[in-house]
Length: 143
Image 1 (cartoon, helix red, strand yellow):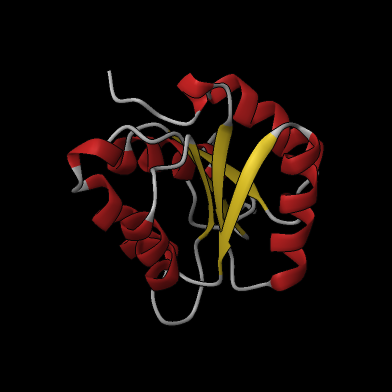
Image 2: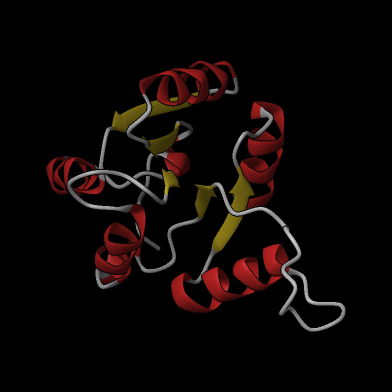
């Protein structure tokens, strides 16, 4: 088993979002829940943090960001054996809107959640805007 900060009693989270108020909101709530939090404004900066320090126990990322988006970042993270199973919460704006060409009973949001799990492993999808307490509950359940 890889020795993580969590096994030493400190849980670490990496928050990646280009929106500074969202990074701050998540940082404050995660800090109150006992996490040590690093933050980055895009996927490229997040990869640099991952290269520089110990791996986090949890990743929370936006999808749409400048420089490197969340999907490209996740693809690169999952290529690293030590991070292949990193619990990840993906945040995005996809809602469960019904389009006229959708088959009866189609659930766009559940379809997206299914694909994220298939593409990126231990992954959950949260719709923006989100309740920070919902994100914390999901984080605790994933750890």
